[in-house]
Image 1 (tube, helix red, strand yellow):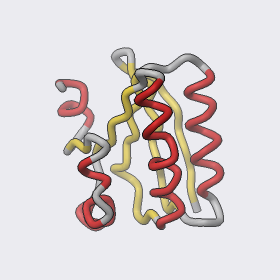
Image 2 (cartoon, rainbow, N blue to C red; image 1 turned 90 degrees about the vertical axis):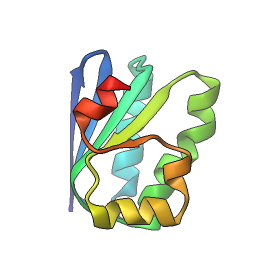
Image 3 (cartoon, helix red, strand yellow; image 1 turned 135 degrees about the horizontal axis):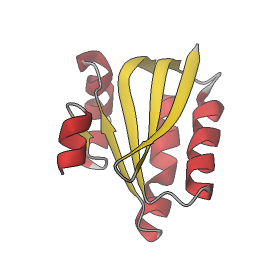
Length: 110
């Protein structure tokens, strides 16, 4: 099960993920990101401190936006991943494409 929470902090649109992102609900994540973009966001922070699991379908959602974000000068950062979830990002090389931070404070400081 996936639950999302959208907030704003320090000029960042924050999308907090709770639970699991898998093939059955990755479209919910995709729609949430689209809504944030449609609102005019230029800085998106994905807070994954309560993310327990992410499948390749969930990672694909993030990957699908990389080129668009670069073209539109939208920054996307991820923070708070558990070691297990971070390892999935690292194995697929996403940690080289998306800045990943220990926590919100580190993400905001950069």
